[in-house]
Image (cartoon, rainbow, N blue to C red):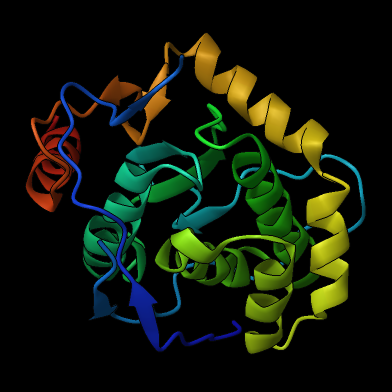
Length: 223
């Protein structure tokens, strides 16, 4: 497996959500984010066609966690930087659950929501799911600065050709993949971000925190 590291992230705003979503359809503090560890295999079909959803943990695990996010959503940044690293450490690195990332551009920002998703998919196509998850964290960590130049610069930090990622973002080269992911979420009743489904059931929370996600996973494991 390839291992990528990320130094420091700029945290998104404080998020308070009701139900399973923070951003619905229709402050910058420097913080250290834990490394994710080796949470995903590296093989992914490359090319410009439709890509599979990035999967971490054990692809054959009995419990599946599916998460829908928008890269421009500040609540998703809170989830990604505060909750996901804990989940990765407890469940993904040891391979206890199957974890699926799904794009769901509401869009919070017409350009960023789609272009950032396409940039991340370009990283997936070039370097696989492990790199995808690390790059995804980098996008959320630098959410207030996202744009074509930043997509390229972040890719270079992961030893991935920045121009390839920039072009994929601006041309929305993987829009078919991203659109299909969003449609799949809508078919499952997703209407906002972040939405976390554990074995198909949404995590209910009053604020975005690790506790409700962990509780839902443990309930599913003991069912």
